[in-house]
Image (cartoon, rainbow, N blue to C red):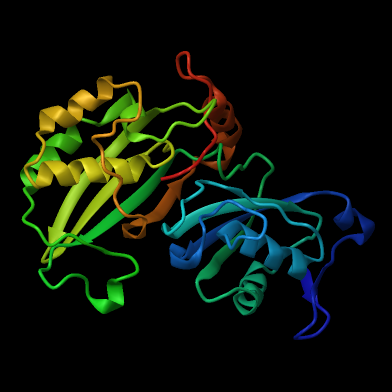
Length: 296
């Protein structure tokens, strides 16, 4: 277990003698955060990031240096209700709910660890993932966005042709090179399998549901930006499909604002299939090298 010397003191690892301090254990974290005041997920010296805040808190509580591996490195301003990360530790945490409660006292109010789970060494938050699910939220209300939603919903007070948007979105489904929608990174592939791109309107709220095996840098917000152009009648569904033939970032595609985007879920295979999934994820697609996971 992880015991506490007292209510306010640091958490110290316990277990079967000295072995708890030499054998690494792997733990999965489920994480939720409001990305407004973070400069993205990835740790950066001297800059407030989600990873940096979490690593500092866990390192303090567990009394050892903790480094996180994440399912998807969200950009500055992007939110998450279903982010997943993992870390290795010599601490034996056999009361994870107690640790979750403890972290709630250590962490700022805009980030929360919602679950801590012991997993096998085959589990990798990044490479084991089958797919990531994002939602992008708009308000078409003429008055803008309700004040209670303003940090997570983008104002889009225009008429939108959702039939044209759905037509254009469906043309992008499948395994393609999404270079036109991605900011290029050296050694990173832009080949992705887009598995879902749906739209829903409820009153003034329009939500895009976007799922893929992985996403390259700025891909989700670029997809949404392209659909905005279609919904407003400035572009056709055929134009959107034609972008798949482009092998460079398209200047015609506008990147939608970050604060409308949220990572809502990451899917993983059964425990017995984790190792095979890790191998498959690392395989090269075509002539393009594997990507450094980043988003969105």
